[in-house]
Image (tube, rainbow, N blue to C red; front, side, top):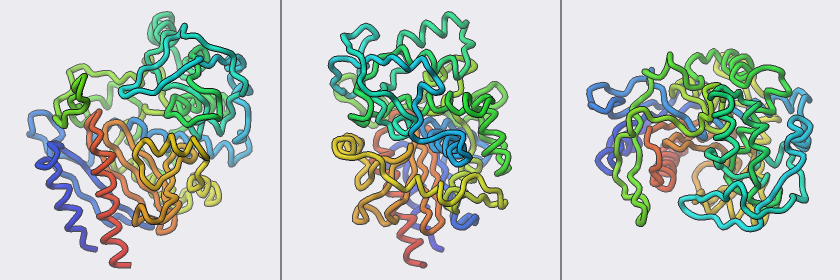
Length: 397
């Protein structure tokens, strides 16, 4: 297949947007249809991009957390409609702030903001579908206090229990709001499986697919990270479009403590490693090596939208035209909005990662760049990559 248009587009991203590097892979039926990288992975522009480069995946982590949760549901150790209190009784008493007005950038309510007791409980499906009413305040006072009290050593389940102290911004199940729910689900995986979240992923997803280059931040891989950049943000005008190196010593605020494994944004890894998971999900849960990580009927749950009414309207404000929100993923529901088929699903990450999974054609796309806070990657670059892939694929098929 001739992907010259896609290659030309990727090679001009630096000229058009100032993007210093990126990597893109397209797979179908366990075969690599296309692979192209561009630019340099260091600030000095001396080291060309390599398949060995690690990237901070941020919210692309959520798809893998959802895979873990669905494994437990598939094995009947967990149920979509289980109450969160079955696993974390700390969530038995929930407070909802009396008033919350979303802003850009987001300003979360204070810990002591006027509030009332919630009428609804939080269920597993509410966490998966971002309708639990939670915020995404990783700098909340209870988390700061736990970090100090534990000498920065609190583990995942301990942090999740602490999240219960944070006020909700909405009554559960009334609104859609991008939130910390998938971090809580990492704690649920620990409680149900009896093993640490990172170990669960290793034993049940990574090792079966022979993946060695997906992990959480640690000293052994820090020097393998591609240089991280940031989009300049004017306090009044918003994003300026200028791309700058991230300050030295940058630490993700999703790393609440040294021992915390964020199910919402904590994984780092290579393009090859992540694409093995995307490829498995595109092929009914079976990996390139024949290992099965999910049943085909379980993978099909990813293609079902779970938001309705005002929840759908709120999700679509994120700019993902033609998509609704499902179990931790966007789901294409409008055939006119994309050349990909209805039921295609995936997500993205705060530094520009993008995953698309097409179970109909057994096709997957994974693209990375490493720029935090660059909104045009979502509104322009990701849709263009998708469209160019399908322009070639559908023409040949």
